[in-house]
Amino acid sequence: MWSDSKLIWRKWLFLALVASVSASYYSQPNIVFIMADDMGWNDVGYHGSDQIPTPNIDALAMQSVILQQYYSEAICTPARSALLTGKYPMRLGMQGFPLYNSEDRGIPLSERLLPSYLKALGYSTHLVGKWHVGMSRPEFLPTARGYDDHYGMRGGFVDYYTYNKVETWPNGRLMHGLDLFDNDIPQVNEDRYAVDLLTERAINIIHSRNTSCPMFLHVTHTAPHAGNTGGPLQPPLYRPVGHRHIAHSDRRLYAELVAALDHSVGRIVEALYEAQILHNTIIVFMSDNGAPTVGDLNNWGVNLPFRGRKETPWEGAVRVPAFIWHAGFKPRICDSLMHITDWLPTLIRAAGGSITHEIDGINQWDSLVLGSELKRKEVLIAIEDGGNNVYGAYRAGDYKIILGNVTGMRNDYYGEDFMINKEPPPPYFPVLTSSYVAAVFQRMGIYFDPVQVQATRDAAMIRQKDKERDATLCLPTATRGCLFNVRQDPMESHDLWDRANNIAKLLERRLRMLWGMQMRRGPLALGEGADPANFGYTWEPWIYNGTDISPQQTTTPSSQSNKQQQKAAVNARTKTKADNCDCGDNFRNFVCLFRCIF
Image (cartoon, rainbow, N blue to C red):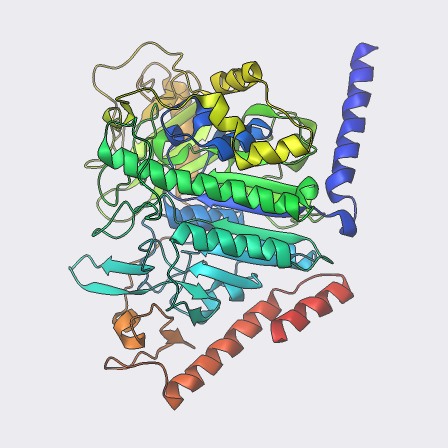
C-alpha cells in the first residue's frame, strides 16, 4: 500500500512540475544557459574549497540539481559542438584540437542546432559571448545557425581589454585583429572589461525582451580562459586585486577572473528577478571543460583531486562544475551520469518539443523533474585522431577505459601548490549570504541554513574511496589500456586492466566500435585569406560561396567589390536562417520567416 501511495504521489508531483514549466506555449520556461570557459573543478566553493569565493554561483547551486557525475568534452570547440547538436563531436569532424580563427571548418551545415529548434518552438534566441564553432564563412556564424542575434566573440579567446585575438600558426605565422561583434558590426569603440560588457548585454536582453514569447539566452563567457600570451591573466583594473589570502600570485589573479564571472552570474539572476521572470526560468551553469592548470594557455585553474588538465582524456579535463536550477526543482545532488550532449533533448523537452531523429544526447528532463536517477548508462569521453596523440576514452557504469597514445601529454596531478593560502580565507557562510543571488532568494522567501549549506558542500566533494594506489600511474598504449572504477577511484590512480580484464575487454570492444564511426577531421586547413590585416585588422569571414575573397593587399572593406560580397553574405545568412524555420505550426513558421527577412 505504501509503495502504491508513494508511486501515485511521485506521478502527481511529476505532472504538477511539468505543468508548471512546459504544459503550454504560454507557460514555456525561459532558458538561460551560462557557460564558463576553462574553469576547474576546484574553482567553485560549493565543491568544498574555501580558496576562491564564488558566492553567487554557490548560492544558485545550493538551490539546484548539482550534477556530480557530469561530463563535458575536453576542449572548447568539441564541447560547444556537442552542446549545440546533441551529438558526439567525432560524428561531425569537430573532435580534437580547437578551431583556429583562420581555419576553414565549422559545425556541418547539415546539422540543426539547439537555437533553431527553440526558435521553431516560439523562442527568441540570443547568444552573448564566445562562439568558436566556425567563422570562416558567413553561413557558419551564429545568426545563420538559429540565433536571432549575437554579441561577442567568434573565435576561441581574446584580450579582456582590446578584444584582439593573436593567433600563431604551427609554422610561426602570426595574425592578429579585433574579435568582438554586435551581429556583423565590429565593436571598434568598445572599452569595457570583457566580462562586464557581456554581462551588461545579457541584462539588457532580459529587460528589453519580447514579452510575448519565451527567451533562450545563451551566455558564453570567455572567463576564466587565459588571454593572449602577452597578458594571460587580466583582472578588472577598476578595483584593487583582492584574494590576499592566496599565496601564489598567478592563482590570485586567476581568482579575480573567477570573481568577475561569479559577479556576472549574480547580476544576471538579479535581472531575471527584477524582470519578474525568474520563477519561470531554467538556469544552467557549467564549464566547457576542465582548467589548463599548466602548459599552453594555462590559467592556473585547478582540477584536483582529478588527474590531468584540459585537452587530455583524464577526469580533470572532462568532469566540470555543472548544475541546473528551476523554482520547481527540489535541491539535490544528482550522482547519475550525464553528458553535455544531453542538454539539447532535455531543454527541447522542457520547452514542449521533442527530438525525433537519432542523436547521442538523452532527454533527462523527466528524471530531473521527478528527482529520479538519470537515464544515461555510458558516455564516449574522447576520441583524438590528430597530431602525435591518438587515443580514445569511454565510460560505462562505474568503469572507464583509456586506450591509445598519450605520451607527452599532461597525465599527472597539477595545482597542489596553487591551493596554498598564506592566511585564512574569508568565512564562507557570511560571504555566501551577502551575494546577489542570496538576496534575490531572500525576497522569494528562500533562506540558507548554515548546517544544510555545509552538508551540501560536504556531499559535493569528491572523495577517493579506493585507497590502493599504483606505484607508477598507468599510461595507456594502443594495445594495453588503463581501466579505472572512477566512482571508487575518481583520481584514476589504481589501474584494474589485469585484475578486471573481462570488463576491460568489454569496454574496449565498445570503444573501438564507436571509434570506427568517427568522421575524421582531415588535415589542418588554415587560410592566408583570414588575415585580419586584409579587413582593417578585424577577424572577418573570408570565404563566400566557396571562394576566398580576401584582397591581396591590406585594405579596408569599403570598396564596391566588398559591398557586393557583404550583400552576398547577408543573402547566404538569410537563406540559412530561413532553412532553420521548420515548425509545424504555420503561424510560428511565418513569424520565424518574417524575422529572417527583416
